[in-house]
Length: 128
Image 1 (tube, helix red, strand yellow):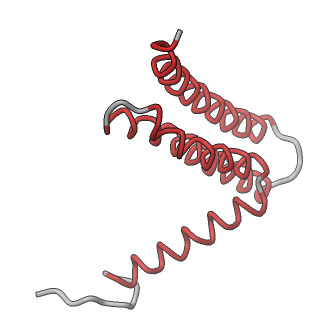
Image 2 (cartoon, one colour; image 1 turned 90 degrees about the horizontal axis):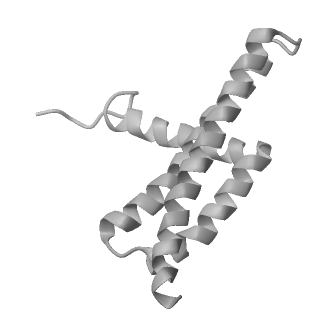
């Protein structure tokens, strides 16, 4: 039988991971305007999702694409922070890394807009 260890294994590892998650979300909220904007959008769209979704799977799709945007924004912010930490001087590879992170956020937003747009269209279509 395994015991719950608090020394970096088992439960301790989970607690440490949750602490790091908290610090990461807090840092993103404090330091990244785009993350705050996307989080505000998520809080607005979350209650709306209950009125738009026809099924539990439809609701899940609406929520997952919102979370996808937040995840990609966190990864983009991490890439930007690490790139700036390594060097603040202009370099083609640093610029490329930042541009690709930005492109990933844009694609995630496009996916979310498509899913939400089609869902809203289907929800209001019967009233036209």
